Amino acid sequence: MANGLTEAIREDVDRWPGTQASLSMTVFGSEQTLRHKLTGYKGSVFGLEDALSVMQLTEGRATIHEQARQLGGVYLQLPPIPDQVDNSDLQAECHRLFQSLTDVLAEISGALSNDGRIDSKERRQIERKRHAACTMMAQYLGLNYLLYGTAEVSAAVRKAGRP
Image 1 (tube, rainbow, N blue to C red):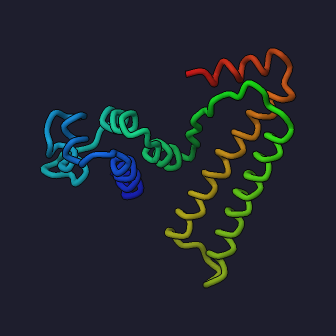
Image 2: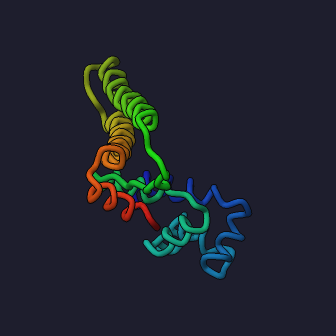
Image 3: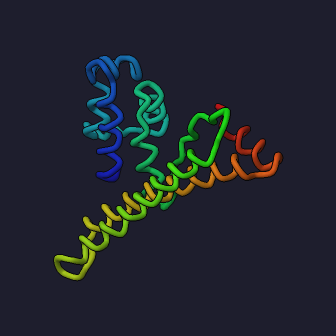
């Protein structure tokens, strides 16, 4: 399991209000299984079903965000669809998108400022910022479709936003 993914799983596990042992008991029926899977004890691995269970119980999404990032994609959790969308919602989202893009550019500039090169650690940081910017863009577009889309477009977005 990639280091970034292990960190993301741990981040989701840490959201559990109880002990790691109690989460392990809830997910696996054993107090030590979660710890074993997180450390790779005797070849134990954290599977997709395990990750899904942890994310559902803790309401964490770091694991799925990291998986999407590593695959060059974006996980976008659909926000609740507001009853009304207006230009102020769109403008607020536009400001968040602009800040997110600025963060990407600042990360690149910072990486280049010390030696004129981008190393693997700097690339990971840039990719995290890129991922956040892509997520923001998807949210911004969704609000545009709700506000300015035809009845067909708006209905499709609302349908996709339902659990």
